[in-house]
Image (cartoon, rainbow, N blue to C red; front, side, top):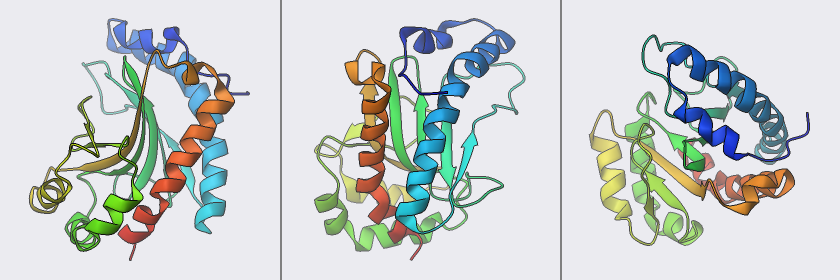
Length: 205
């Protein structure tokens, strides 16, 4: 399937009541699009990183009561899973799409990664555009722009607090016209990941 963009219907998925009903809509409306976008981006990242990357699409398998408020795809260097590894993500809440390089709390070596980032703070600040955003919790919608965030304090929290996370990338509002143009969105995602690849590599040093 050719990815032709996200629609209002995709975002409306998160207004559907009931776990089973919402999951059915996620599987039918959104996951085929993730498969299409994900394959293109996985191939691109594999080439750019010189390392085979693997696509994972969130199954929300642990949920038994509450319907998911967002859904996502992840691309990681591990075939079996992504949560314990630095990974690239694209996903939807009801009001925006996120494009992340994600370091979440399951990372076994997040303290070391945080220290590496703190030692390269200047490089990161120079590398990452001011319109990029940072999230400190992947469960929450809100994010802080690079021009407003105290990056040092955020990375220190990521280092010191067990459940702290660090996600960096872009938010695209649900009503942004770029989302209705499949090619333009994939291009934006590729450019975002290319900007963040040096941070990904830094995390593996």
